[in-house]
Image (cartoon, rainbow, N blue to C red):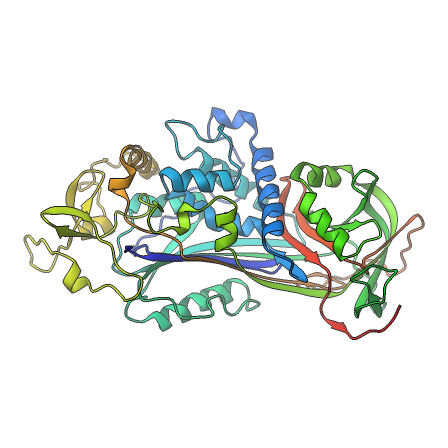
Length: 531
């Protein structure tokens, strides 16, 4: 028996979207971040002196390779590790105990972030890191990340969590009614995703959410980039692609684009791979890794044994080199169900209704059993019946208050106070604009002292990640580009992607992998019997 369930979803496209389903709640006010995007970045504390950017980027690189290895042997794979981490971050913010430890480990955060008396240091660094990504991206590239928590309109979320999620991740809270109108909730969520991916991902929730769903945490990451050196317009031709290597019969034909000039390039004798950088105008770069004499088996071997250190070392080793480039004009799309993958990578508690603990997100509803107030547990087979399972304690106006038990204070609070706390009602007087962070830290301290008693029963049921990447002569996501000359040539190196390869969109200053892909059979394609 559990109090609710959650579903995680995400989407990508050089446009990406993420979502997670949870049993959470509804709140009206949304905290507007005090930090404007164009403000200079400042260390949030003395701990920033350790410059944790490398730790964050290495963690995301590890998560990237782990997910790539764990998602099976799809012909073509694409996902956004940055987007996936962006969905997990607000969940980490609301978790305690085993759930918090496992998500932290999954994201690779070491002990420098896990300060004994400050559970928020991780989130300060992630906030600063996200701001840095936005500030570094220059003209010609667009990176937009948005996130929201869709909550059941009568389910209580802690106000301090809502404010903190908005402060750290610009995650807003919107009300829906999963219980009485799940189809309308599905439409509302899909419309939000479509609007924030500019219509490129029109549907994220393929099926209607269960009526027992309490919340969906959703995020969209949109990337749009124009090549710094566009491929030759009008020069693309259908050419054979060799999934099993150039010594075997070709499996299909692909529209091959051509380019030439000076590009970041490196050939590793140790790893027996080549890497090429295709820069965007705004400073981001698509890197392509090509195994020597590549075929599908050599690509799988590379995927299984490539380490984050090796991956980042390859990027750092590239030097400007004259290169002739042949690269498929392609679309890569994938829908990944990552719940089992994340379990296998160590985040088991989040998906287990018996052990998941997201008590910083919600106090949960309660009911009376034998005179002892405990968290109410509902079945997943049928929607909860609030009339039968909630005990209403009323005072003053008979219709003004529905009381819920707060495991921090061990007292009952009017539900309206949970939803719209005023300074006079709070046990923490409002003394500064960021006072809610102190309240959340105190919540964490007290709830961590007895995590099982505080557990509201909120857990994640699924994590869905949708990705779509469109690569053309002009750039990624079919961006119009103009002006750079057609007549370019390279005289030293030929880099021909007519065999299986890896690619990733990367921001070098932050060492962040925005998108990752593995290609063994590019689309669109045409039948081929060429050799």
